[in-house]
Image (cartoon, rainbow, N blue to C red; front, side, top):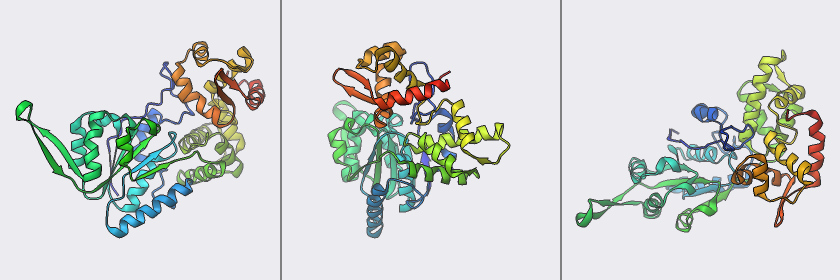
Length: 356
């Protein structure tokens, strides 16, 4: 399988200060630069850990497409960032034995970008478009006949002399990935034959991912250390792999042992200010404001944003989802409220001066 990449997206900036967030689920700048050399990505369904129901569905579709000698139906993958949508697209292409072209919606702003991508395809080729909901209206309308009837409708000339020309294109598979499926237009959603969600990973799956990654980078790691890393990975493989790389860096500098144990994990992640539940300084500042200044809430989002010096949209999309996922925060009609579990965790971690 060959990969042609024009990926240009994934800003990992959590706020207006231009700071990258270590436990954010978006790619860091260093990870964007090294993504083409990423040796941790699985290459087959067998190697892909987790998402068992999704894999079963896709394995059936891939085998059926291969037996008929046809292109796989267009596929939409949706869910939070960092769960493996790009990796799954590459695995599917590998299983189909075809080339995958990896791109993103911001790279397809002009009609000629779409046309150039589709004209140069080989039969049954796979095109992966990340954050597909960000495609503009013109680009989407070009894709409608391409996805449904395998043709491109182009306008040749200008004014009264213009005419419509249809170009037949080979059968292909469009894999669209999005974190916001509701933002896709209805005509675009209807043209995907398969639509599947990726869910957060449980601790056991993350432990297996960490062990696999450690083996690939020739790193010895204990069971307890793998468990600790899994607990701090926020249910996201991208964060798990990021943490294991940073722990490895720390061990190479500060430890004489060639094995990663719990103490090394704790020392390394304390340095990066990632606590036992995967919360970072931003999360704890948010919880601390609610608990210490507002008695646990309820507090309006605009009030919290002003007090923290953050944009309210950033809090809603970057900070709050994980806190809600682990049961530390509730959104009510009166405002944000912390749970008793959040208060207990905050009081237990505060004496360690992790934020300082």
